[in-house]
Length: 107
Image (cartoon, rainbow, N blue to C red; front, side, top):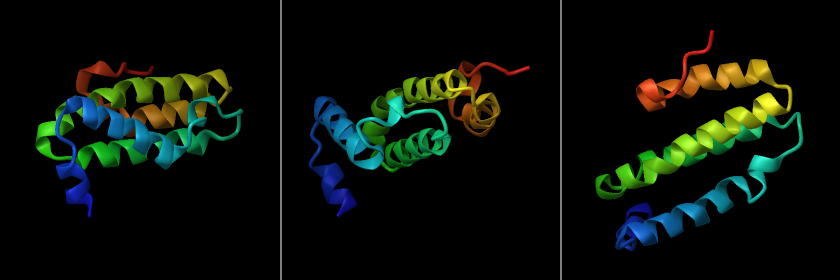
């Protein structure tokens, strides 16, 4: 069924639409605006989207992976904003390798 879903995506615009639908289904439309204390949902959201993108066909994966870095940064900043610096640092340490040199080193 998953391959049939992917086979139905005929181009990047359709794939982006599909990513947006999957984001809403997987993590809920309000994931980036949760109140403090719901740190696990940022981690869960990022992980689910990354797993989905990683499971895409090669011809779509590169384009779709472009949504990961903004999601990663926004999740990190939301954690910091809500006073969850320790969780934010752990999140950064766990996922920074997904972006090579793009993710800053925390000191």
